[in-house]
Amino acid sequence: VYEQRGRSPRSPFEDPFFSFAQGRPVTLASDPLQLSVRPLPTEGRPGNFTGLVGTFSLNSNLDPSRVKAGESATLTLTIEGRGNVNRIPDLKGPDLTHAKLYADQPVLITTEDQAGISGVKTMKWAIVPEKEGEVVIPSASVSYFDPAQGKYAVVTSAAHTLNVLPG
Image (cartoon, rainbow, N blue to C red; front, side, top):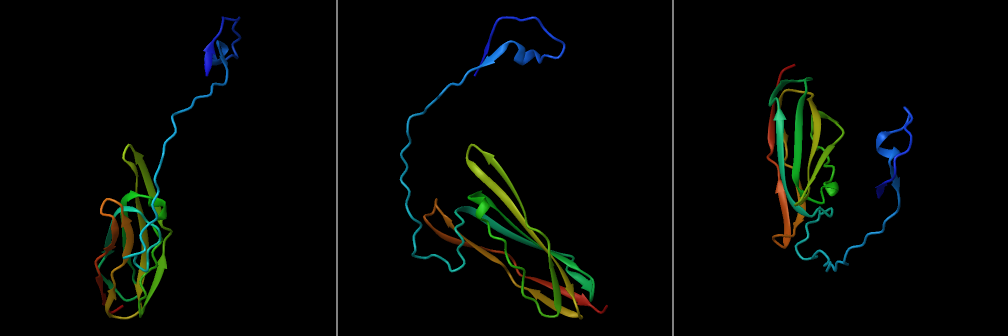
């Protein structure tokens, strides 16, 4: 805590805030809080559960959905929600035949307010098809425990089809 003290002769090099204040330590304490922590249930726990707790959604986008062989399209997965967002997993890119996959670094943006922590994690992959035809991009899923519902939930993205024209 800074307390104002008597005036002293000023020097042009003195910081006006600190020239009249002197710090002293102060100890503050609050009343103790009692928490009751229950373990997450084992019943109904999905096999891909990573410890994510809160409420979340999962969206996907493929842009463009039509390319020539050898050109690239971008698959974007976005997980958004409120809870322990730092536990949002890095999803593995889809396992595709006749296409190469190049992953970008995942990006997590968190915000904090009176209700807690929320965040958005974005993962992107460049998909480069090697031959003409259709490349089916399967859906992705993320499981989490929803404390408001008291049970596990799974969010799933849409599947996409990449139409590949001759290169």
